[in-house]
Length: 97
Length: 479
Image (cartoon, rainbow over all chains, first blue to last red; front, side):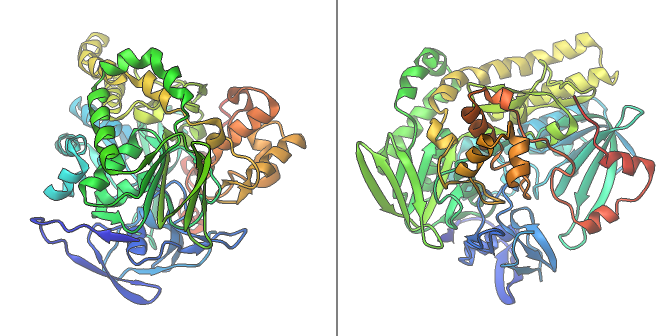
């Protein structure tokens, strides 16, 4: 679905260990939580509140609220607006509101 | 953060960066709030930390944002990244009180910051592209693909289909090709009739900076990607995620397998904050969107409030930079740092830049104005993504007597979800207008209220109970 480009000659970017639904995932410094979801193949990260249909990141600019997840226990955070930090806990599937 | 700033700038794209830089250079105490992790806006996102390889893929127009950010850093303006502005209220003493939420996800800090003047540089949003299946996972905005590329060097993989109209779609195709990413198809939804209608503006376009770049871009993409023009009845289908893209072209119905569908049909001003503050706005028929009423300096109908950049009307990054510069000069004059003559003298350079940047826009606006069917869908196509309201439900509400978007919202909740109409507002306005046979200006827009982005009860409870804090969440009727 998504892949990271090789960037020959670039300075190495530090890895940032986070958990996604309890599983350890290595993100990179500067990644948004939404980028972590997409790189992990989680193009759906919640269920729509009315129909229950799967939804995932759409605009990545803070407008659409389709990438909301629970971050460090705080629900309904826009994944595209939060940059990863070491030890961050990301949980999907908790609905939208 | 100090108690009272001379000017608060909201948004750190080219308009906000220019405005904050010029304001600080005029010895105005300046604070810039931005929602993203680093300044640059969407267009110059993450440019300051980009690798040479990534800069080469994205292109020169992106790379030059680094100089703007550096000038801003040296200007002495205070920069608050990762900050969500959710309210701005005029106090009795004429100062603006700005509600800001800031900090790590589980420990947001909420506070009010006062300023004598406000420059909104909130930029643009992707225009809603309501087609059947646009809520499926794997269907994303083309701008989202650019965000991933710019901030993390992440690109799509598998069968990638681009669909829509407008320069950004072709730019993304070209960036993907530069990065060695295969694009299975580019489905161009530009109506054929648009080419003829755009002709009167073609001479200006040919003389504009966009022409040479645009022609080279389209040629290079056409050489390497299957481009299908005149695409109608575009739809995505699953189940559970996008698997197929269907469309009509050249008299036939087609279906393509897709792992990722990237949609784009232009951008529109992000007006939520300005409208909630009470700035007057109007319908722009050529661009089929609302825009704020502003004067030649970006001054709105509210005292001390300016709007610069695409948030004041879509015109692109160069125009945004010029208009940010102009708004800051107007504020410097209003706050007594420079007299009117000095302001006008200093404005000649950004005004020349603005004139150059606006040349050729009329052609692009006409050519890429999306077809009615892609702005006003029918049937069970979802219009409001948050509350899952369909086009037919909106139409039925109007037939049942709802005269405008606010009554439709009361009937159906569309526009009442967390995105607060950012993804459906224009669609609802145009559906109401068509059904009632009135202009979108007469149909009107959602009434927007604080907070313009959701804050938690915990954050609200932490605000405090001082008179200023209470005032800042009480909405005054602007009209």
